[in-house]
Amino acid sequence: MNGEAMRDQWYPVGIAAQLTPAGRDSLLLGEAIRIACDSDGAALVTDGAGRALPVITRFGHVWTTLGQPERDLFTIPEADQPGRRLVDVGTVLVRCSPLRAVENFLDIAHFPFVHTDILGSEPHTEVQRYEVEIRDDVDEVWATKVSFYQPQAAKSAQGGINAEYMYRVPAPTCSVLYKTCPARPEEWDVITLFVQPLTETTCQVWPWMALFDEDSSMTDMIHFQQMIFVQDRSILENQIPALLPLDPGMEIPTRADMTSIAYRRWLKRHGYTYGAQLVAA
Amino acid sequence: MNWTPAALSQDIPSGSAAPGQLGDKDIVIWRSASGRIAAWSDRCPHRGMRLSHGFVRGEFLSCIYHGWRYGDGGQCHRIPAHPELTPPDAIKVPVFAVTESDGVVWVAQKDAEPEAPPPGLAGFSPLRTLRLSARPETVAAAFGGTGLDLRGELGGCAVVVLIQPLPDDQCNLHALAANGADTATLDRVSAALEALRRQAETAEEIAA
Image (cartoon, rainbow over all chains, first blue to last red; front, side, top):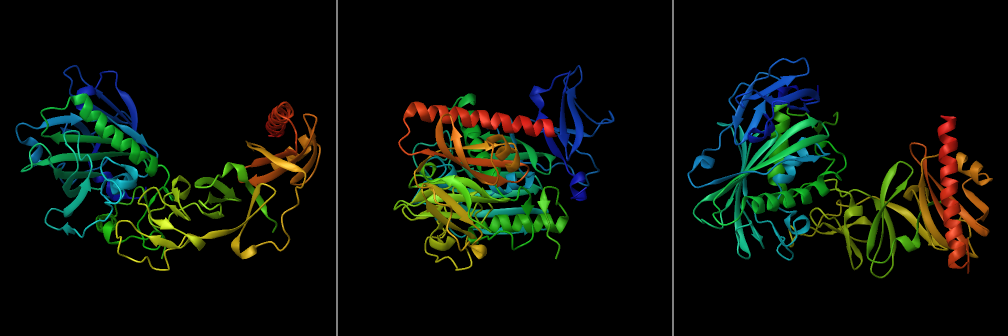
């Protein structure tokens, strides 16, 4: 399999609160899996041969693996702060590489054109210099000091603000965004993108949020995030090639794409290439 | 190589972009505000997004993903994330040769631009384009002709049917009807074209 190293990773496969004893079939890295629960509601995930796979329930989702992960699933300590509302956004099936879905989440330059008058608007298109690093101690990609003018940064935002962002990539198909919280400027909202790779060119995206927002209804918060992601899907299903190109030459990045450049470099370094295109030298 | 019919002019109004094909290549066919037609590779070199999803402003086509703006010759003129930057000459979308005559948009590879102009279609007006799951020769046989430039009668009206071969045993039919035909006649031609499509697709299925 392309990207053998990705077998030894944890992947989201469902919302913990929505499991059924009857279960449902799905795919993980091209292999058949089944997600169900026992009579106590505990998650059960099995492979195509009926063998039980390891399970972790965290961030409202069920996680599993086909391999032997060296590490525990990452944590998001901020999400445990009291007062946050935890939002299971649901799922969107996208016909794109799981890696392209993550890369799009790390991109801010598309806001004025894809999320027009919500996450961005012309003429506020400039991307200021920000900082990107691969943190060797935790083996994660981080982008910090990202800022962008947003007409409506969140459901709770009243008018335009200059939103501050921090991006974190703790696993090849997961990203955590820490974003200016309109309701509590001293805190960060947590918005995640958890991606289940079905095949190299199809994925199930499970956004999840931990927000300070006492006013919006759960339905409104879910609708807001789903609207954003459906706009992204119209892009993701129309990129050529469908696989994420990891070698330079196929695509032309600029300074605004520093996070994407670091993400691609990190994927390549680790051999996280399921969903990627490597051109022979 | 000859010119390939890729679209009817009326289907690409000023200020719009649409997807098209030349053989196995995906192209974007777009028309500027002043009416200039262009055919380019349907892929933004930045992140591979289809340019046929983009938007036209003035004489430029912009990618819908990050707003990169391209002009004459496929050259990138503006990267909105870096408004002060003059994009390097190397950022360019590959372009195709394109010409328009008698209401049809014709395209060809840039390095193989045909010397002869496209066939004349005087006396005919563009009607509609249909896509078929059948090979060109099957369609021609169903029409009762040969080649890619079919002339004859459909629905009691003189017509020209231009076949655009596509990969995977598909093709487009760009149909034109005699000038001055009234609406009722054009409706009959249109219905006859759909019957032709069914006939060709059925013949193709039986052959398979």
